[in-house]
Image (cartoon, rainbow, N blue to C red; front, side):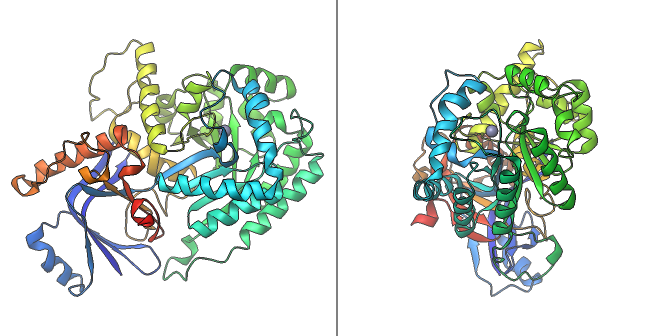
Length: 483
Ligand SMILES: [Zn+2]
């Protein structure tokens, strides 16, 4: 049993989180949270441990300026595009694919290159605080196996997909038939599902899905023939738990081309629905320009949206109306969408999700006023800190169908967490208003300080402040991992 004692911030809803300067969190041998007690002030510590029968247990005490939050969930990124990060911003989507993305992805036919690249990519993503990641690989079976192997060996929680793409792609980077695409899809699924489980779990065994799982990845409707989408739909129907990820309604030219390729579909979302690919475990990236009917369809199917604001800005795609989706009760998480997005960190997605919401608000002519707490509506308003934190953690968990396991701290859930360090020695100094004198503050004042640390971390923090990254209770990254 591992017991942490210190400050904990925990998302509780789209509009709230709890902050406790003195929490005890006990982690069992399987990496699940056994129990949590909040607001255990130092003079009550021994008594609380005694009540829990843990008087002799080793307690890991966090320092002033350190706090735990649930790990970040990146609901959309492309591992093979990381080497292109920060380039191609002069293009919109379709040209960017042609001139920047496809040429880089085609290099992953070389398995040695794939291994060298993916090791660096996955390491960087974990150290940036992403405990669960939805990865697109390339169309290559062997390179995508390598990506999954690395994710598995590094201990990250992830969904790894091999792209299906058998049309409207360059002649040297395309699958030759829907049969070949499906054969490789079956092969990657059996490869990933053959990974041994990381440990023997003590309880709620049925809730413990493997850390690394396959995910169906039709790249986007344009790149898949009807035949291929139909085969993927059949495969999905026989595997109800298999997640599906794809792109939707990112860019106006892309939408127009999609409608031309699928004249019988009622809408872009309707294309995926027509082939049985729109369901409660489908992750739809972007959703910048959805029609009202598409929003209703997505809500009816209970599919989730991955909001990728950095990419949406960078590729000139638009500003997704995330507040509208939240008001409709559609599940929303955040995605970095590297390398349409130029940053691998979910912190950057949080920052740009905030800016995107402020742009919607300004465009709507709304004044910047604090949200009345009793009327949580989000459309065309700035997103408050609890909402941003929720989207990056619990919202992402919902989108991935992992809300019972991760995204917040609760007994029985996995301990997927970040130990954040805002102390000056983290090396990101001068940003925090950090004080070394907690004793002079009341509990209420300390909660307010914790709130300030959270906000500053979300907007000014980086991987220097991510001291430890835990997945299923195991230390897998962060600065302390490398000491
Ligand atoms: Zn993408």
